[in-house]
Image (cartoon, rainbow, N blue to C red; front, side, top):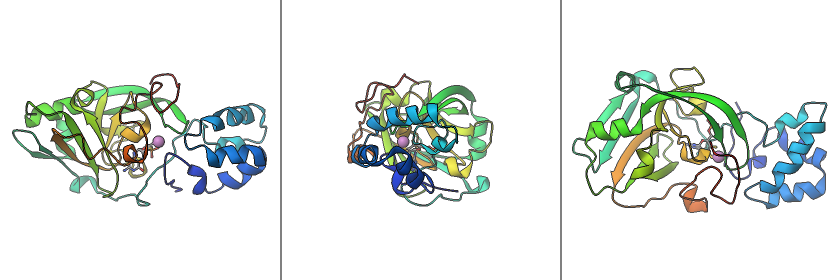
Length: 245
Ligand SMILES: Nc1nc2c(c(=O)[nH]1)N[C@H]1C(S)=C(S)[C@@H](COP(=O)(O)O)O[C@H]1N2
Ligand SMILES: [Mo]
C-alpha cells in the first residue's frame, strides 16, 4: 500500500501520481504544485482537470475524494488488538491504561462526518465510532487547572494536542470503528486512532497510544511546529475556506 510523507507535498512520494500528473498539468502548473505548501492553488486546476478528464487519470489528483494514507514516520505500526493499550496520564486523579475491550465497554458514540486534509482532499460522509474523549478524561478524573491534552502515537514520531475545551467536545472521539470496520484498519491508524471531526486531518492522530492531560501548551505537535495552525478548524484556519466538517 502506498504511503505518503506529509500533508504538505504528497507529490514527493505519490507512486504514479506525480509523473502523469505533471505531464497532464504542464510545466507552469507544476511550478505551483511544488511551490505552494498549502496546495490551495492546486485545487482549481485539479478540479478543472477532473471535470474534463475522460481517462480517470485525474483520480490520482490530490483533491480526489478518497483517503490518502499518511505516515510521517514512514512506518505503519503493527499492533494486535489483544496487545493494544491506551495510556491516559498527566493531570488526572487516576492514570489508567485502556485495552481495546475496555474502550468497547465504554459508552459508544457514532458520528458521520466529512474528513478534510489541509492539502485539499476531502472524503464525504465517513462513518466513525468509538468513545468520546471527554468520557475517558472523566473516567480518569481530569484535574482542575488542566489546560491542554497531548496525544502520542505508537509510531514514536507523530503528535498533536488540543485545548481542554476542544478535547471535551462531543465530536472528538477515540475511534475504534472506521467506515464500518472494527478495529480501525492498520493503514488508517488502527487499532485505535483519534478523530477531531471539526478540524483538519492532521489533528486526527493515528496509532493513538498516549493521552496526557497537562497545564502546558508544549509540545505543540508534529505539523503545528512546522507551521500549521494549532487551532485547526476546517474552513477558518491555515488560510483555507473549506466548508466546515
Ligand atoms: N501517526 C500519524 N497520524 C497522522 C498522520 C501521520 O502522518 N502520522 N497524518 C495526519 C494527516 S495530515 C491526515 S490528513 C490524516 C490522514 O488519515 P489517513 O491516513 O487515515 O487517510 O492522518 C493524520 N494523522
Ligand atoms: Mo492532512
